[in-house]
Image 1 (cartoon, helix red, strand yellow):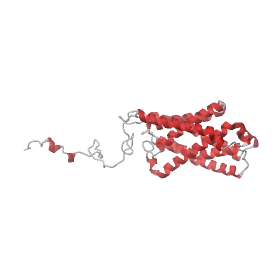
Image 2: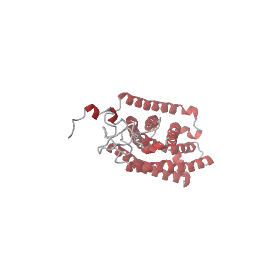
Image 3: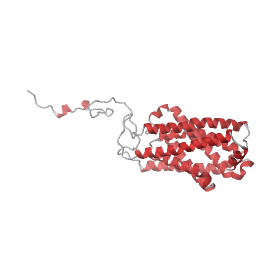
Image 4: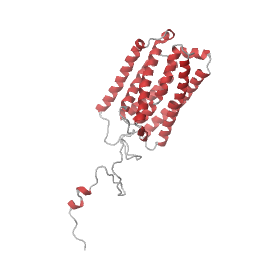
Length: 305
């Protein structure tokens, strides 16, 4: 015969309760504690319910103060690159061959400074934190978010600089490129998500270092030098590795993780990759033709742009 039911205090004791690191799924089996949980995701490889189309978890809204500090960092970056643009001629006076296009001389040196900072920072981030590729959504190394925000400020400054100083028919491709980057990076900065994915995109700036050096040598009328030839070879090599291959890897990552990426973010990323890929293939063809199969007329036309 069954005895009286046990008191409630003995049925539910502190020792019988699961600790905060233990997860009990619906089938009653316990998962081992200590498995890492990422913001915006469940346990590794599992989706977590989100309260927004961009993957922010329920109850975890971006605080106004945090958004304000993000925008302040972007604005500070914009101002810093603007000051650098205005003062670069004092540090690097243009040669006689570049004096008729002073704004472009300033613009290229400003872009070179950003490429060294962002490309070098992204490369160092993946070198020091190689495990970051396991989760490009919710985790990133220290300083990565700030680096992406600084890049947003630079692209805004460069967009405005080109819009004010160059004809639209000459700059529309770069203006379109900058618009896509600003939107994609802006999402990562404001939501503090996909920062790792944005850091992968900044690896492209490793190649941009040599693209800008090439333009500087071209404007300085140093086309027929060993330095220009060596830079051209390195430029094409880094173009394949850090630009074409990197964008292909990013496209593959989006395709493989489409179930874990919210629809709006997946759409923005896919459209961005669909725009960047043909643009970079066309630019590669132009570089190859100009530096290895060029005529004197092509060189002169490129220098005058």
